[in-house]
Image (cartoon, rainbow, N blue to C red; front, side, top):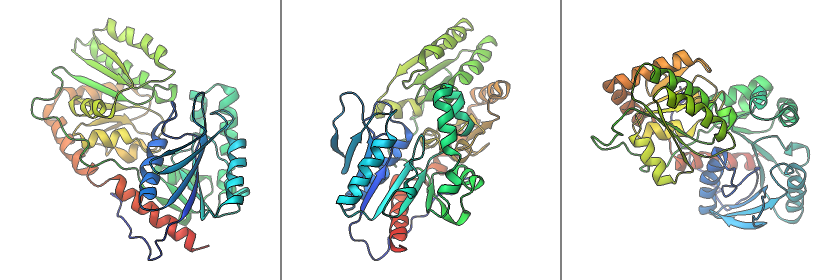
Length: 387
């Protein structure tokens, strides 16, 4: 179980610093996800506190090459598929032309191996490494390079101060060869007050399951649909809401047609606003997230803050954001029988849902973006001061 983080006060030397952050995407990118939410929530707060933050990310058709987001100076170079080489070139140019205190490599997709070429100290920030799960999402010609490029992470980043967003990610990094004392866990957060339970009688009138996130193959939303189909075949009234967009939607729609034959209503909501997201999390009966690996699973924490229990795969990252039997249930990944059983238990037992929802609210109260940003600021100060 992940403990609520305790903020650390910044060191006495709190004058403005210049951080160069490297991440494949920024939050305006059409493919942005949880890593980009984290980036802007954390480093946007540092920018508001007087830090100078420069981000080198990839571009896309029609994107401005330079912009400012949340106080962060954004340089966009290359594209999603060509990012590494132009990103390193732009970063080295910035390092040569401007005073930079620290390079933060936000490892997302494949490593840039900043310790090999950076003239300034490096802090590694890791959500999760794909490992073999890369082959579940991408074709072989993309998955194989991703897998191969991750192989030397333990050797080439050994001795580099590192921040992981979960204990699961920390364990993975240590298994790969990083020193335990070099890896600190700073969990993701949420915005306090944004997520609140539905008022009495405010849940959807019929049993409702919710998936909220990108529609990617590796997210395994198909497992939710398969479990829902089994419940429908029992004659249960059930609706599944799928909120998000992605290139796997057409495949999921075919799965949904089978669920519909079993009497299950499946609705694809597409992209939803933050306001609509909060409403869905509060009104749904159960939230589901069945991917084989995540850095953390922010949606699980948002559901908990909304008083809604989660049923998730017992996989890295998700087991950090769901406390089994306390804020929801963890099931063996890919085990549709157990998934359906846990969903059935929750849908049939309002008292159980309410209890897990209350306990989830208490758990989520220990996390906030402000607290995570404070800890990141303290870590960055400590790394800079140690050079």
